[in-house]
Length: 165
Length: 283
Image: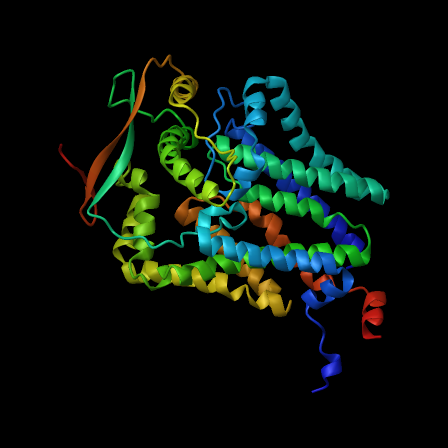
């Protein structure tokens, strides 16, 4: 084999073309890998592409988020499109998880010397005002109270049965 | 096909992808101007930690004008960049506008990600795609095009690698469980329609559904071949399209905007190091 005819890899060409770009790329790849393995997949948005990589396990009972609008726990969301429905649940779930996780994250950042953390979960009062306005907009009615709860379903092979309280 | 023809064709794809993303935002009422009220729910990641300044977020929630200006930039800058690369030869302006567009799209992705259900990933692609046009010469375009191609390969391969690291690929019930969680609401409320029956079939046929998951894993891992050779790029493109179609019909996830990545696999065989550069390399 004539090794002089082997075409060099792109990465080698990049080094010859611009060493700064080359080292930038290497630092980016190594930095991404380091952050991912140390912090987990969601710590770093450039590599959020897990594509269902965490291990899923089958449960007997599944929780399905529900919404209570103006005291009506059987309020039907069927006239909203799927995106709006999911958005309503998203805000409730994200807010709850952010309140807990951000405080943990603050501890981590502060332990690393990054004392002035910028990420803050919105205050409860701000969130409450927002969610009322947002629900009114999405549902197209005046919403005075909106709540979130979970209904539990038992998985029975080919169907889901509502779990009685 | 010459590099300049590919450069311009990539520009058309770039414009289409950007307009499609704007349509997605508009149809879901999630342009910043359409978001009223607005609430920032930051995600737990380092980039949001670095870039999302609370003072800026506060100003954005209070000022409709600021939101409108940012929306206009997101719509108009890609059109401007497309016009520059297609109709003008001014390299300096192309450089400025491509960096500006990339930065605006990156920041807009962060804003949209922390205020709506739309995720940041698509905007990383759009931001990087803008930088592909930074150099309007054969050598520069060769390098930006290939860096972009490598990033795409890196994303896909890392998703496969991650499945190995978490050992999800060895979990026999993985795909069944994913389908259960992904379509839970649909299965509970519309349990008798055609789609539900298909999903129940896949959930109960653990072997069959897991083989689909393994197939996706193999597709993702096979992207590593792209680091060493461009020979298989057309095959990778076909696999990528299969992945997008399966995701759309089975998982109800719209990866259509990722065509902006996939296009590099179509054009890659035409993008070779310029002759002058190769001669220089051999000396």
